[in-house]
Image (cartoon, rainbow, N blue to C red):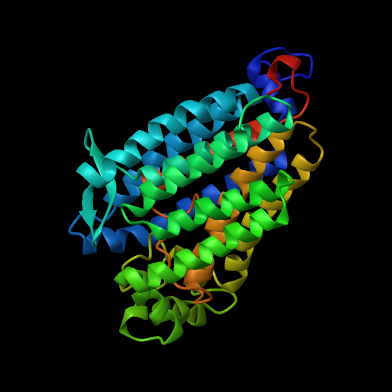
Length: 373
């Protein structure tokens, strides 16, 4: 194999010398820890479902290989390529979201999954990165002097996405989409009044959801007054207590045998019990590093689209991780949201891989003029 030199014009060589390697290393570390935790947490979950012990592990590892390939392939794109992928991807993701309430599979009172060709797809996981990129492009247009009502189009796209998410219903993903928009609007320089109005809308929506959606009221009530409905959170906290600082050892934990979502939404509890509080803190640190490192790279970029798109991708990634961790530690009501690149779930894994591939592409340095957005 020939060496990848700085003067080499091949795409792989250009990628290697322009990519933020620390960001890639941090993402690789998160993926590796996720694979280790899936090996520990998925077999008991598979047995509870009546599957072979390693059937869920095999599925996740198959998705993991595909996700890594997607992340790498997307990271080779120029900003223009990322923008085009976002626009095309959003059209497809919105079409899938519109189909979900009509022909989707109902699980626990919600229709969030589509069965296509033997695969179970959750469109809400795929829409987040492409929406963030498209919104960034729309917000950029009027600030470049283009005669396009970009702000109005961006708000309309987010409103349409939220309406489709609420029809499932999926309040957690809706809040994540709105929060991501709020961060992008703030960075774009929109008035504080607009940001405050968006925040007030979110608060009002939460009140309405509490009064009209029983499952939302149940989760909030369980957070405020723990009882039978907070069983998983209590088991997760017990796992952290049992693990202490250094953990019980890989494979020695017991919470995965009794916690229904130990391989999914509560996988951090498995890490806390088997690897210990220090390892769990390291996982938190890795997520924080990815977010902070990404923003540091964006600070040095004068391309508004790159800044806004990267901001949206980082905000979605960081807020989702914070929601998952906060739910596991009983800091906020449970949201049913995965830990990015760690929890079990093919749609989540592919959606985050797409987002991080876009982020790596946007934070590359020494782009050719043709690559400018």
